[in-house]
Picture (spheres, helix red, strand yellow):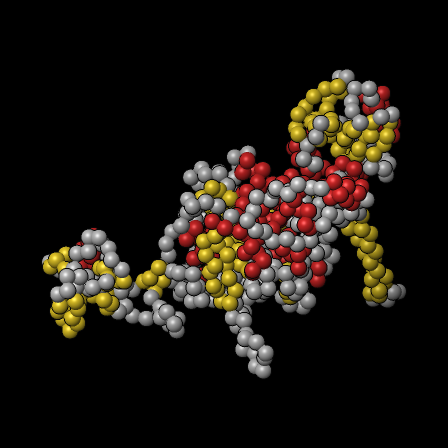
Length: 599
């Protein structure tokens, strides 16, 4: 390890005192990264900080569809919100034993994501309606995706797998990031898939025809079910009939001889028989072994043998990493860049079993969820776009009308299993205030990641802790006109002031707080007010957050892609008054409409 000189130490100290960044060449000296290689870019955060600082969000149940129609203790989840914070919540659910596969294994068995590709594009459906955005670019996009990959790794079951669809713009960077996050030893395949094919003329480079899936596992024990397809030509991609092939391969094996159609035969010189004796016997029973008398060969002993053993290829072959036999996207789909069901069917069948949990946190049009539903898997879908959430609800509720894979002339014909829509980081304020007190208290504590530990100080009941500091959930339901004003803080301080530390937290509905300050200082104690809805206080968390911006039109439904924090939706009350003016001859005149919107 390089020993710092006195001049280097002095330089580092001076830079830190001035609040300046250290040069990159000091990183390897000061910090042991323990990695053979890594991708370096601006504003790259430590994994430990990402896992610790990302805030979880309580999931507010909006509605369960087909409630009471089965489910075996599990209800599939469709979640509207920022997927980074949702992944922190799902990780906590895993740690609490609430995220399990049907066989009891904790965690998600399979993750499939098709994230925005960081191209700067806006994807439009029709009439200006935005489906999703890929405006996060460059290093910001890499870090945006890396944060989510870290949480996805932590959320996976020990034998889980992840597939990430990416294109040529950032695929090489994301491959390096996935090596860092999952380990290069857990890289399994780069799978080539189709994309929209452009046939542009008079260009200065080749038209781009493929995307790729980066396939990683969490360990060598990952679930993998070998998949097969009709035999195709290795070069043209068209279906090809099985052919008879010579049954020898290069290299020597021991023992060299095999019993083939009742004869003990040695393989050709420098080669070995392709199959084991057990496999040969099985193929003979299937009628797939013959002796071609028109071919002669010299065996290992130098003898000239008339008649070469041959085998007939199977109708189906194991699927390799070339998936260009499938469509890349659904042509003519209303939702842009919609993945085809055939693609997800292959992924889900290969890397999960019935009853396993499948997660897509860039769920888009819901292909992953729909295919998981048809294949008897449990599923979780997350998206921050309202249009995506509406599209998925409709698709799942109408899944019985979708095509059946086994018989394309028939419909699937089965209704979906129960699934629940949740809001995450975006809550209906009236619904919260209408909760029974214990449910509201639990929600409030989880919202600010407080420990639920009731305790008393000077006979004052408190609800928990934020770090080492006490927390009170203001009980606005206790009295009809209860408000949190300066007098309340004065009374609290008189009772607790000498018995608490420098900080004390009060969680309260914003409408119940009668002052604007984020905290009120009394003596040596600051009484912080955590409002619902709230602004997170920089002094508490040492970093800023922004509220999720609520779209006001279909043009900006995806402004929430890179937002962090919480905001609340509150359905307004609209009052209307109608009046019609009549003339003296009783004919109708003008109609007046007065409308008042209450916040």
